[in-house]
Amino acid sequence: MITKKTSNEQGRISGRLRKKRLQAGLSIRELARRTNLTASFLSQVENEKANLSLESLRRISEVLGVQMLYFLSDFPDSSVESMAVPESLITPDGLAEARNLLDRTYPLIKADLRPQLSLPDAGVTYELLTSRLDHKMEAFLGRISPGTGNVSNTLRTATEEFVFVLSGVLKVGIKDRIFLVEAGDSIYFEGQSLTYMANGSDTEETVWLSVVSPPAF
Image (tube, rainbow, N blue to C red; front, top):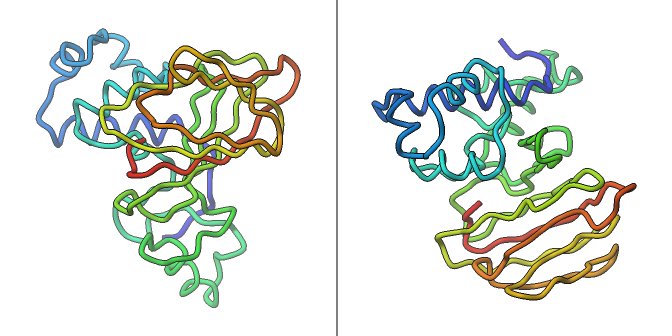
């Protein structure tokens, strides 16, 4: 049955983590050993009692062999009927449209059907703007709360990334330099040279568009 779209991202992350861990045949203790996290912390995450940081999510993703965007909310696991969609589409006439919009081979992504990943402890939300993770590039919208610190992560894959700031100020560290990227500014860099990314304002949310090739996030 098609249901209303919810905002319980943490519950989705916890469920996907447990599912993927079990599919990999790993106990919580073994996953903890491989990620250098504690078993008690991972148990709390799976039971929705703790939030993952970006770094913790990166470690878990590497061990489980998936991209971090695998944990995006509303990313399809099974049939369309089990997916969450806007209430406006829960009608007989809207069923066919809903099936198309939730099919990640379909080229159109509606604004209210973007998969989202929220990391409350980091003050960051990502919205996926590309339909699949196996394209030659990925694009996402990032939002970072005022005063939030470093949210960059070291990528194993060599990538190129383009960032365009829509509002606010983004502090971007490239090797040993820090750049202040203001609204309307853009910056292009090799992913492995990124050392720092943070909100450059203590009072305003920063929103930016990123395009990464090949997909690695």
